[in-house]
Image 1 (cartoon, rainbow, N blue to C red):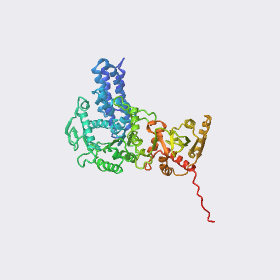
Image 2 (cartoon, rainbow, N blue to C red):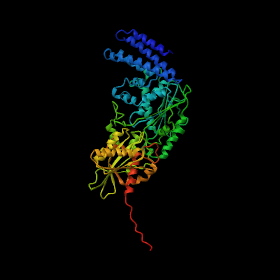
Image 3 (tube, rainbow, N blue to C red):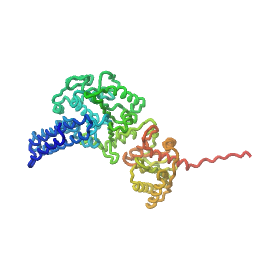
Length: 571
C-alpha cells in the first residue's frame, strides 16, 4: 500500500508529460493509478480511519473524473476504444466497493429507457441515499433506516445493493425479510437476474471470477462462489418458521413489514410485527467472515408511529451509528415532487391527486412519511363537517381567533369563521397558517386577512407575546381602512386538556371547506392537515391548530348568556 503522497507523485509525473492533451496511453495509465488508489482506500475501513478513507477515495475519484472527461469527449469521435476506457473508470470504482460506480457500470449495457439508477441519480443524491448505503459499506453506520413513499424505488435499490454485496463479500451471506412470500419471491427473482443475466447487466464484468454455484427456487435462495453454511442470498417472510433455515452474516435487509392499512390500524398486529422483528428476524444475525457483527438495513413506507421502523428510530435516537433517511413525496417548502425522475417519475400533480383522494392522515403517513398514531385521533376525517357552498342566509357574525408563534416549529394560526342566522354553526372560510419566522410578514398577512374578510372581532392568545402581536396587527388593520375589535386573552388551563375538552364542540359546531376547495400546500390545507393529525396518544406533535379552535370554542361559550332562573320566595 502506497502513501497518498506517493500516489499523487505518480499521477503528477504523468500529467507533466502531457503537452497539449493526454494521449490514450497516458489516460489509460492514469486510470490504472486511480484503480490502485481506490483499492488502497479500503485499507482504512477496518480501523474506521474515515479521514484517510475519504482522502484516498476523493483523490481516486478526482483522477477517474479527469480520465473520464477526456474519454467522454473523444469517444464520440474515436469510438469503441475510448468508450471502453471511459467505462473502465466506473469499473475501477465498482471493484473498489463504491456503490455509485457499481450502479452505473452494472447497467451501462442496458437501454436508457430500461435503466433504473441513472434517471434517478439527481433525486437519490439530493437525499443522500447512495451516500448512506456507502456509509454502511464503509462501516460508518451499523443500522440504516429508510422511509419513502410506495413505488419510488426503495426495494429495487435494495436489490441492486444486495447484488453488489454478493460479489464484494463472497464469503458472507445476507438475508432479506419482508411481510409476505410474494414480496420475497419478486426480490429473489430480481437479484438473481442481476447476477445471472450477462446480456442485461455487467455483473460478471465486475466479478469475473465468481458465478452462481447453487440455487433453490423453492426456498428462494442462491449461492455465489464456494460453499458456505448458508447461501449468499436468502429470503424469508413473517411467519415462515425460519428457525435454523436462514442466517445473515453481512446484512439483515428488512423491507415493509406492514402490508396493508388494515394491519396498520390494528395495534395488536403492530405489536406482533415488533415481536416478529425482535424475536425472529434479529435472531438470524451472526458475524461475518472477519468476525464483525451483522449490519441492518430497515426500510418501509410509514404507516404508524408504532410500526417497526418507527420504534427503531425512537430507540436509537441520537445514536451516530444509526442513519435515518425519511423522504416525503413533495418538498414541504415548494410543493414540488421529490420523485420527478427523468424516466418513470411522479409529478407534483400526481401527488396532489393522491392527497385529494385520500384522508389527510393516510396521505401524510404513506406519502409524506409523517406517521400519526390513529388511535386517539380527536379529529378523524369522517367526523369533520365540511361545506362545498356557504349558506345563503344572512350573516350574523364574522369573527377570528389567533394563536401566535413563539419559537421553533410553532405555527401562527388565524382562522376566520362566519356564523349565519338560524344556524349554530361557524364556517371556517379563510386562514393564516405558517411557521415562518418572518414576523413582519405575519403581521401583514393577518391584517390583510382581517380586512379582506371584513372580520368584526378577533381574539389573540395573550401568552408568548400575543398581546404585542395583537397591537401590531390592529395598527395595520386600521391603516387598511378597516375597524376590527381586536383583543388578547391569557390562557391558563393545560393545553392538552383544553383541546380534549373542546374537541366534540369543534366537531359539532365548526364547518370546514370541502377538500376540493383548497390544495394541501396552501395555508388552509396545512391547517387541516395539522388538525387531522392531532392525537391524544401522539408524541412531539404540533398542537397549534387544535388549540386555536379550542380557544375559539371557549370564547364562544363565554359569550353565551346563561338562562335566567326565577326562584319563588319562601316568604
